[in-house]
Image 1 (spheres, helix red, strand yellow):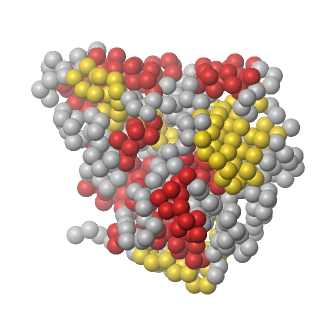
Image 2: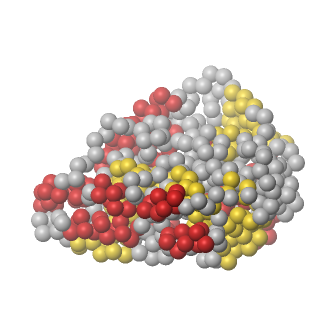
Image 3: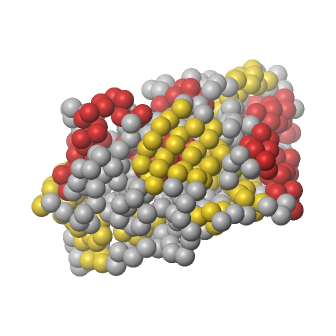
Length: 524
């Protein structure tokens, strides 16, 4: 019988923080900020997106109940100006800011918050027209399976959440851009097409989306935290890193994410450019599908772990802006287990394990690689080819396969049955809680590669349902030991993603989660 765990909180906590801007306020107004990136957004409605490029844009259009202090994952107020939590940590009351309107002029109030959460949670909601993958990741499932039992609009600007169990990362989860408060009026108007017509209350308003090309936003003149400095914000999709860097040098874009590591020194040497390093808060990995033979055999997975040379991959493709990974979460995050010993690079040991598993002459398999640069994997195809080469050295032949980015995600992340035998993937943390790396990716209810560990599930659920950080640290260290023994994936790197910008771009504060709000960026 599954145990239930309850918070040891003895007193109610009232959080009151003054609603002052957390940004500098000495910038200049005007101009258009053009951001070049490696791929387009998949959608702009939380119903159907899990990708970072969608979330980056959603962060500008929508507000969330809580948010992160710029450059960190520290939770601070947003449209919820304060909150209270009960003794048993199962009832949360949020006090909303008054006078906040959606871009369509309707009021953001408690009923709007209730509408959005019930839309995500309840499968019989008339506008539950999506997969809502993140909701199930963060809150356990739909309907009765949801950790959120009930949402009550107490009055116009007070909303109450009643949880079935305490939840340690609750406030951090609410700050994620994947839980934005959207206009109920707009959702009802556009229905399943809302992802192309987003309406929030954030610092920028949606103008147009030329799919595959650009997304155009304009400043929200009445934003509650101050009008953005730039008049217009444009996200351009430029898949090739070199082409994007060239456009930055010629001046057709102002900022580029996904700067190739080998271009960092060159960008630093240019008088009109600056390099901004994003805090390392990610994991790039090579996953193996437990539902596909022979990857259901731990000896095969362990052989692969011994066959891949992580140091060479870092030297070849990251220009030193990365470190080898041995756990599925970064060392900068609390709860990291540094006592775990990585599987050493040892091709001969790998061959022995394959022979023990019944594959002395190797086998053939499919190796999927990402078609677009990601912060944790700037050159997916080349890294895929490197892994292919290492595995060929132990007589295993990988066939390289890829698809366009949205299809790649759909086949691996969003499909009920992952088609890939092995695949390159990665994750940048959405919040400052280990739950977002461990439960969101590797729990039996959330893993994409059919990894189902009841032992791990028990540990991760226990860690979710207590609020004592020291006890949670112990549980997350135990979880990393379980994952290390099971090898659902080979952890490759934690990268430090470089961003390049013109020197005329000021006050660009990169977020560890990659979802920085650009409200207070200004141009000379």
